[in-house]
Image (tube, rainbow, N blue to C red; front, side, top):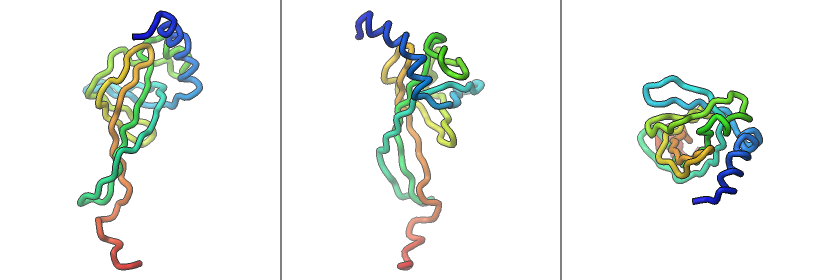
Length: 131
């Protein structure tokens, strides 16, 4: 648990942090309408897998997003997510992220997500001919 100073600093700094390091994303709650928000993304690769469709790489990025109007004040859209829906998706560019768990809550809430991106579009073993 942070101090009163830590809480006050987080509220005051949130708009500046999002303005400096944020990217546009689309938050879509399960069964709801998508909204454009500004988020901070930290991408972390956790593994590769070969399967019948080729090779995939799994990511476990953390995403920090505004959950109060004050935190979202410095962003282009001014939108925020008051309640995190565990079944929601976050789309950044062409990457669709699925929420795994909430890591920390406050004016800026950090969540852990999951994403699987295709590395090869060919079948496994297709390039085996020594070419």
